[in-house]
Image 1 (cartoon, helix red, strand yellow):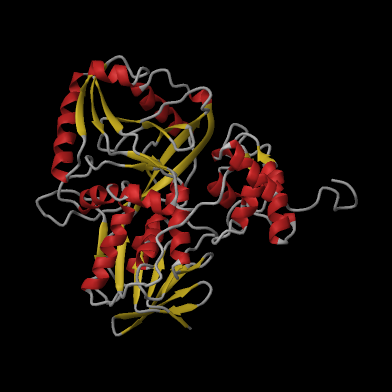
Image 2 (spheres, one colour):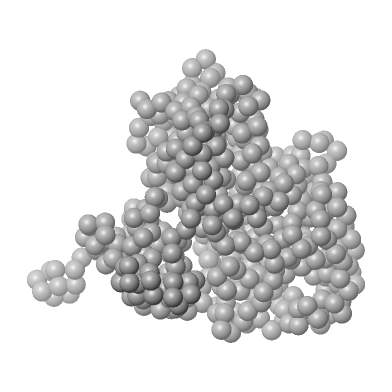
Length: 495
């Protein structure tokens, strides 16, 4: 049985940020992820927003880690080389009855330590956002809010952790703990057992089930909250900021926001579901989305949609540690009291992406408080560079790249201008892209107007060639999602 000092369960953005932070030190660390790629669960289907921190209630762990995390993103983007823009965001009030909510949010933001908050008049909002509902009565503007590429963030953190000595095993599912005298000694997986001194539970939607296997917080439950989104054709509709409605009891509400890739997205809806894998799209959800988004921007037309998707938020029922604050969906980031050797990161819904680097710091502090000796890694390198993308280079740089490798001159995805060279580079990256969705997350292939209609067969052939497998073995994502089941003339020369 292989032995590690620390095992991290879950390869989403939280788990990968923790892995990267621990790679600053010298323990032997393993990260396991049950899917075929990192960042393919909750981290793969969210709004990719870096929240300012005015929304969580003061005194909650969620508020503290949101604001602390927000301040870390400029240096993170610089070190890990991913796209990040502080475009700011607006909470827009429609009608006089919604105006008081802006004062409440601003007051919360000030208490949480958020800087750069400004209340705007209706006239100022109309000047800044010409498409806004003319019945706008005002807005709260937060200059520290931003947008990022969630996929790139997660992959960059994982690659940097790997570079600094963390081991990552994909397609490896946690099955249970190895426990001796109420001390965790290792874990069971569907592949093999691993020994360890500490386990960090960053299992997202399944974090409650993991902790329950250690008889920890048996009253804690995660209920998935499904949110549906529509991605709009950038040639038909585009904005350059993030617009929230006044929040309700269901959450932050349906918003309109830009992305680092140039699209405008509307969503999410908010619906509690029982199935932790239910990412379905419903007519009712899309109707609700349209009704709510038109309250902000009446001209939005969902016929401009080029793709729809749904994500699941890991909404927990943990109360705020301060009993004076009646708040039952706070983050859990703590050492387990019921057993030795377990740190739980659970109920990490929005603003989990924003808070993820701060969560990683907090986990490191908890380990130190528990007496874990974290010796600095003398070879730690914070820098990770992305692979080249011709469309982001100057003409001369692009030409040099093509001269060095002519595959960078062959367009595979014409909507997004992605080349064969980029796809091949990701297949052979430190964390290899071995499925179509992994290629899509890393390069943005298949995300344009044709949604893979032009590139899919080409990408399947490139994957088969580079992985030295049959095209019949190439998958969309996890096992069972193969695109092809036989050659078209393989049965007696006929279909």
